[in-house]
Length: 351
Image 1 (cartoon, rainbow, N blue to C red):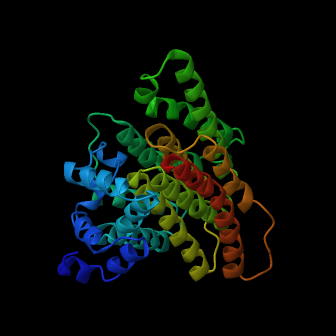
Image 2: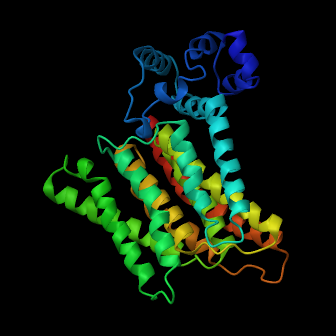
């Protein structure tokens, strides 16, 4: 490994050593340097499926043939993506942006626009805001950026009907079919219909579950933290670095808003703004990992455990920081189930 790369990332050498790489392997891995990781390692849906370079493909094929277990390759991809300075700085930037927006708008009903602001920051640092041609990633971007605007309209509506939340969940489910229509059209009629129906039901259910938490800022913040981590880690375990970055962005933004509520000692009602932003984005990320990567189908219903877990009783009279910690723990424990499902499926695909 070149000394300059090791100097910028002082623990890379230790990571690859722990993963079982020898000195020659570390020299070969130097091709996965800063600036190239997102486009060279595996499938990156947010970058229009940029293929890995020929050198990287040749290296991984050769390395796998010389090893009894290919798990190290997947682990190396994950760790190097996190070590890469651009990825780490990007995730940190989304947290800072969400925290600043949350603080600035804490006395208004718009504080949960911080989720969309963090997502827009991640897009600006990676693929930009181009909308043509309308790929799956760009449709997901449009839904994610427009969802909070729809939420504002309903949050500002006096005496909003109780039927609005279920109606929005159904609309989100229908939109998911439009988002993944190009993928579904590549399948036979009956499998495409069944898959589309299942995806729409999952998205509608997850969005409805997050909207049900919209009046409790701590609960929906914990749900966003758990769902973001679950979709992000499941994405990378399913060979998608793009969904890792996208999911962790939502988790970082939700975590920032949890911190804002603890620091200011006040409940930030998420309303339809926060509920739609978290629910729609994480649901589409999870569905995208299923259709575009290698996420097993049974990981999707396990995602629903996260909003169900944060709805469990929490100490109501405890300090806000204690309540936030308990709810976050609920969310993280529930998020472990889809993550373990994705990990188990990844293990099976490598044997």
